[in-house]
Image (cartoon, rainbow, N blue to C red; front, side, top):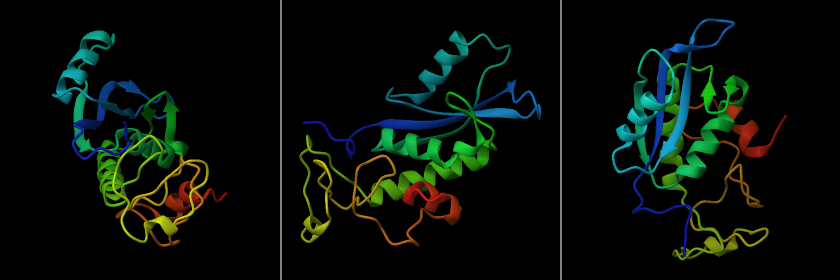
Length: 174
């Protein structure tokens, strides 16, 4: 059975930039936030250097190993949606992007979760979380991209992230 959170999985979320890929309005470099399941994540970036017709190679700003790459990548993209440029490119400082990926990855690992087609232990007491659809939770009570009914405490936020921005994506506040 598959799980979206697999402690044994080696998948990476990477943050890269290229001085030749810029926001036409500000002329600042854009930051690409993506994921790869290659054993050596630099291989993915090297393949992009060969496949992408840019005069300079990508700079690797950060690579974060994560057990829930889909959730981490989507949550980071959602967190930076106001800075979204195109596809996986964002108008955000690469250092800030790396810190955000690390913070959200740590948060996800501390709040792991299972989907209906998974097999993972549900700690005692966790079954009181109210699933919607076929979700079953194990320590991960929430994701902005699930149909979860359970909502965490309003002050529960990954470290060093802007709480107001986090609340908007976590609780769908406008």
